[in-house]
Amino acid sequence: MRVLSWILLSFSLLYSSAIQLSQKDALYVAKKVWQNEGAGKDKYLVWWNKGEDFASVGIGHFIWFPKGHTERFREVFPLYVAFMEKKKERLPSWLNTRTSFPWKTKTEFFKAKKEKTRQYMELFNFLKQTMPQQAEFMAVRLSNALPEMLETVSNKTHKTLIEKRFNEVLYYKDGSVNKRGLYVLLDYTNFKGEGTLKSERYKGEGWGLLQVLEYMDPKEKNKQKAFAMSAKKMLSRRIKNSPPSRGEERWRRGWNVRLDTYWK
Image 1 (spheres, rainbow, N blue to C red):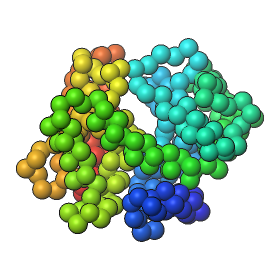
Image 2 (cartoon, helix red, strand yellow):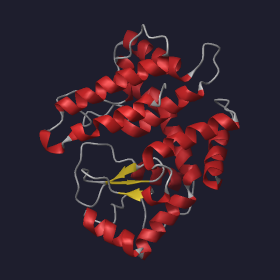
Image 3 (tube, one colour):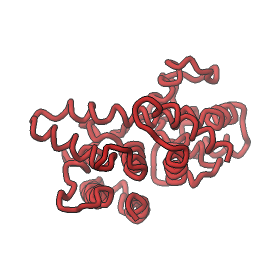
Image 4 (cartoon, rainbow, N blue to C red):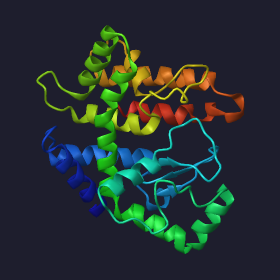
């Protein structure tokens, strides 16, 4: 509960001037994101998922590559480190934006985790103690997502459509923040990215926030449901287009369960 209170405080401070959130709403968003990524358990703060070639760290399971690793997905953890450096927050002495994940293989990592080596514990404690900042980082990333998406869209009508749908998910008709809509956009941006990187494509087709907004059904009145249904289609397309060696079909059920929390 103390952890959630810290996250709650960061959300309240972040949105105090831009988006008015009650403490209850802020707690709702923070708790659901961490539940999605790590079941709210400390042991998942530093993790390496089955079938992936990179580690996932923090309450947002930010991607972090080991040295020499090349991957099409956006490496998010160095962005968080840069965010922390800008805030002049204290980091472990060995950690900076150029630091790779300290263990080259999954076997090496889990050995260090089991033995609770000095470097592992320094990383774990850093992540445990900076949960509010991680929540703030995710929210700042969302606030930057709309202008980033619009910058990649050349057609003026298309720009207007993306902005309209983003706002329909985030706000009620009276302009107040829809707490579920905030959760939907923040969680999906953290989960599958903004959709603006050309490298995050299979066969030229993406699956990020931008693509989900593009393919929302305009006839669906429940905008969070429309978003979830579109996201399922985008991730289904991703699975279909993915290299067979990645075996992404195994993730479909878990992804769909997560997306159902967006509206059910």
